[in-house]
Image (cartoon, rainbow over all chains, first blue to last red; front, side):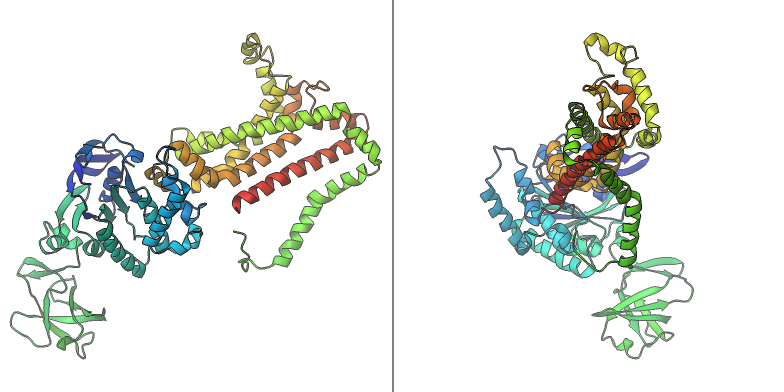
Length: 322
Length: 272
């Protein structure tokens, strides 16, 4: 189901959370709302869900204006950052909740509910935890249960608010890859909010970069990274260096740099301040005369110039762009 | 929650000893002395005292009004706690502080004020009189006084539990299609029920023993509006110490059985 967001504005007191947002999300797409905290991304997600009412504008699902429809009737699945599982219910009862709340006419029999719940628990690979209580589960498990619970009512749209925000780095990585695969399988129109550019790049079909209540750029991960529409997008989507050259300023990413132990043409001298192996790459922090801001260069770990390189050594570098 | 793990705070022996000494001095010895005193009676004498019609009427009245007021306060208390936790409005802090006033006010003052208001000539009583509703000097009045005195219990036990439930929980339920009543019944109620029962039990227990606020509004007509604590006072005035003790023992036993029942119920809810 497609989502159209038309001229949405929202104000909290004097704070303009969202300013005339327009956005089209295609059916089956996985879209990331990316931005720093306070940029309005969560507010937008909550407005799509119907948990928050906008001051202006409309939300249209598949050609149908749902702006006045209650959250109960929008048929969206919502996954919260802190899982929001029902503490006093078992995992099974949590997942079954949405089905059991249906009116008598629509409610499936307990047998059908049980089948459905086990099917979903199998899908999130946690069927063996059906009788546990949420507090006995790890963060990653809880979030997968929250997802199964949201999917139980067969929503047309899945909304996820910083779904991996409360998890540790390794689990987060695993879970987001898993989510991307799951999305491919069930192909549900999904929107997720994140402040982590890496997460957005890895999971989303399209990224919506937001700042201060305004959309900065909409595009595929490749587009927003390679052709940033503004300085803000450029800085937000990855580390960047600023170098003063003849009074003007050029910007480049840490990997867009060539380094050498010898003074090659076009290379300028710098002093090594730090050498950090990061795995496949190594990061060298450089100090350039004439500017306080340090330059970071990331090169493959087997780079010739790195052999025997120490803090305080001299090194020559050149941005490979511009 | 009942899992036994090694305690964070050491000194189990010391703290247990302290607890027992403390409990003994303040609770067990005075209550035990009451039983000892009552033991001067033979069983038949004891039974005779506690099954006297006047005592039984007072028993019914005391426990009945205490129960009714606890039920009323359970409903109002949860509502008040809900409003205080979930909404911000001007004067919220003041209302929050006012909740505890019934504890601070001398109960006699409360009783006299309520009597003045609800007596047939009083401000509210005179309005109700033409409608044929009598509050002061009836069990209704007793219940009213108890509702006033025991108001804080349910509010103060439920309030922190409600505040602890994140708003997201309700939102999650709403996203899953639960209607407001369903959210309350299936999501909030199970979470607050143990605290709610505690508040109920406290209000009920206090209501059974309440004296000061009730005697003014009750009218104290034997067989009709005479509460058990008053009956004990009456016996004491007549120097019938053993009779008073016998009633006290009976109240204690009945209260204990009821509170134990509530406690067991609570356990079952917390560990299904």
